[in-house]
Amino acid sequence: MSFRYEFRLSGSGGQGLILAGKILAEAAAIFDGKNATQSQSYGPEARGGSSRSEVIVSDEEIDYPKAVNIDLLLCFTQEACDKYCKDVKDDGILLVDKNYVTSTPKGAFKTYSLPITEIAETKMGKALVANIVALGVITRLTGIISQQAVESAILSRVPKGTEELNLKAFNAGIELAEQAG
Amino acid sequence: MTNEVETKLITGNEACAEAALVAGMRFFAGYPITPSTEIAECLARRLPKVGGTFVQMEDEIASMAAIIGASLAGAKSMTATSGPGFSLMQENIGYASMAEIPCVVVNVQRGGPSTGLPTLPAQGDVMQSRWGTHGDHPIIVVTPSTVRETYDWTIKAFNLAERFRVPVVVLLDEIVAHISEKIVYPKDAEIEIVDRKITERDPSSYLPYENTDSDIPPFAEFGIGYRYHVTGLCHDETGFPTNDPKKVDKLTRRLNRKIERYRNEIIFYKESFLEEAEICVVVYGSAARSAYRAVSDARKLGYKVGILHLFVLWPFPHEALSKIAKRIKFFVVPEMNLGQMAHEISCATKQEVVKVNRVDGGLITPVEILEKIKSVQL
Image (cartoon, rainbow over all chains, first blue to last red; front, side):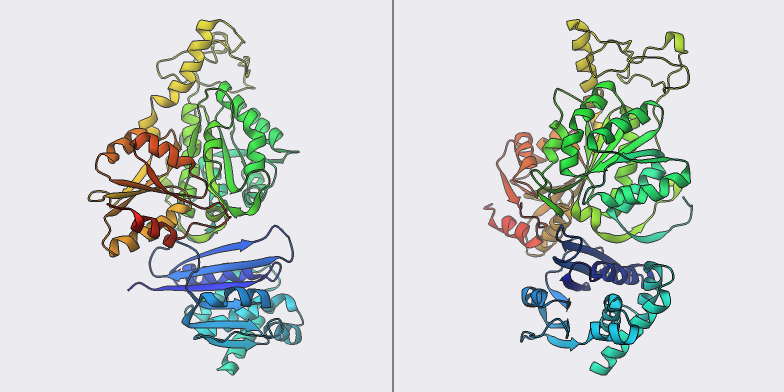
């Protein structure tokens, strides 16, 4: 049986979910040597409006690039959580930002409600890096992509001068996931 | 460019821009529009570094005009747009067809008509890409479905434009344009680059639209001593306008024949699992990605189904389809429009086809295609 793992990162425009998806895909495809695609769906607005980024990781060539049977769903808004939680697999993971998503649905999946944006604000002093904190959490919770690969992908994708801040944010995410068990 | 195998994660739009540079494109004029903007963005950065020119124009009418002018001056040129801009370009695309100016027009399809769905995919410009400009005119349309295919077909688009002196449309859609996926670049030695045939005549005896055996007149670039007339009006071999019915007839027939007679060298498609198939899914662009999955699932369930994946839409592969139709009982045609190619396929195969259509801004899912395959009564 071939291996296929589906991530959906959902929230609103401007939260950095598309960049986070590209980093995950690059980590898997370039630094971990698997196959990966990242695709997206968003509205015409520059900020706000719903936004979602989907990453497929596989050991085979990836034809259909959209997530239909989700292994990991990240939600940065309540609306996204309400809309997409039904697409999570029975043994999948629902990860929500505690500060934005107050009500989480019951399901056969495992739910983690973590203060992702709060950590970005208090520990990094910038809510802007919440997407990278989330990457740390995802990397640790799923174990699908190596920590080293995600670090390398972060360094290749973030603006010059922000490398240290982003790596710190990533490590804060890893820690957050470890504490959550 | 390199001789080492290089692997990167890039989008279809980035692959298109990079491939254009490899093909030798050195002039881009355009007006940014979603979902094609990254092509312009990438070329605005890259072109000046390779001695090329990037111009952001006032609109798409001017963009098309600018790339025609640049091509006449000898540069390989390109523009990139989406539906609303593609509509504005049609008049000058006709001019490029008539005046035989090689150029590449990338149209990243989004939902339409009008401004439609700016950020979502569609395949509604398939007929427009062939017949958007008026009159019987030559044009070639290619359409890839992955990032690597976008790279390869952008280079091929330039080669076809140069060889046949026609505008070539690269039809992408939001999925193919914005998807990030792994690309293993071809080695330089594997890439074929074609340049337009330059005249061997001196300026005094040069006929810009000379009738030659190949039907493709040799080119002379502007600015090096060749003075000739270029017009959208019907013209004779000198390039000056004419109403002489014989000359007009000759021109119109030659313009179209220069593609028709070489159609077998232009047309390209891939067949998968068709040897023993009873059902054939005919597909192109990003919908092909869903079709491969659906067909693989259907075959596991025991259905005798294969794929005909079209990369060149125009000229249309009528002969290939009518040949395949002799052994196929049903054709299934998934498209993100209301059946633009289904009609053409029906004509070629002389069969009713089973259509799978989506016009809501979403990519057709493998399940939607699989259900139609299952519904066919063999």
